[in-house]
Length: 262
Image 1: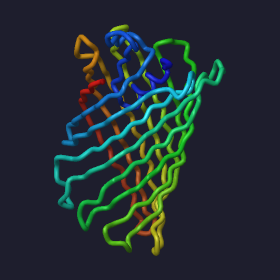
Image 2: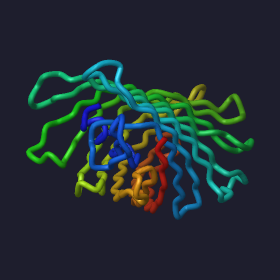
Image 3: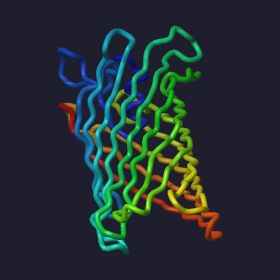
Image 4: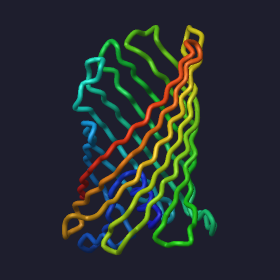
């Protein structure tokens, strides 16, 4: 496996150590990525679990797949505990280019679950292109990702539905701090979508800007257990033309996670 695939795993929010095939786990060996389980909790009462699998179809053709599910421990104003699921897949191949040594594609499916008669469910898919950009520093890895977003939102009342279309820009960045495995992640994201209700007039739009920063490190001598502490800032600007509504929401979230590799 290439070092850049490890960097991508780190950047998308996974504390990813590396294991040599025939040796004890060694976090300083950036040559392979193994399967893992990852659990997090944040200061807003959300618990999330993730399972990831990474590998290579052939030399220079690498992939990583992530399955997530999160549930809030707090009850919303609508009387339910919010839940969401996410499936992500990244595949990159060696290009031979000095400036863009790897390029490929991404698939990101996000599901928001409706739990009561007043809640809204969402199905969103982002299909994109991803590449590794060469930097002057070996410890710094950057993967820009541009994706087309499409999906739908609907209430448990079948008459309330809307189509969602737009785009999403991500920058997956990671910085290796030392040979023991300590790292930083930096992940800015911007998503802009139009929301078109079915059967009624008045299109809405939303712009979401998000920045995640985090620090991770191994917490066991064998390199099987890792932890990550992160902060995510989110700004949401929304507007609905039919009712002349505009709104801005700012949110800060602190999260701690523990991962186990097997």
